[in-house]
Length: 60
Image (cartoon, rainbow, N blue to C red; front, top):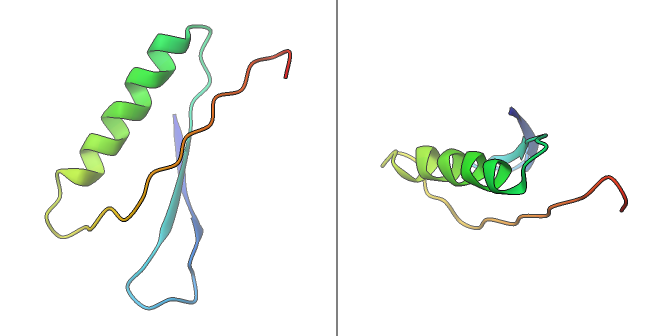
């Protein structure tokens, strides 16, 4: 898994966070993304405004 601040740099007290996962098993990738989302949501000092997901296969 890799995570980085990807957007909203010019907005006060707001950050866009991107998370990427590479896996040979779709269910494992989904589990990792679920855990990352829960980790952020578990912090009361953060407000999770939205979540978008996209899964890509090697033949896409």
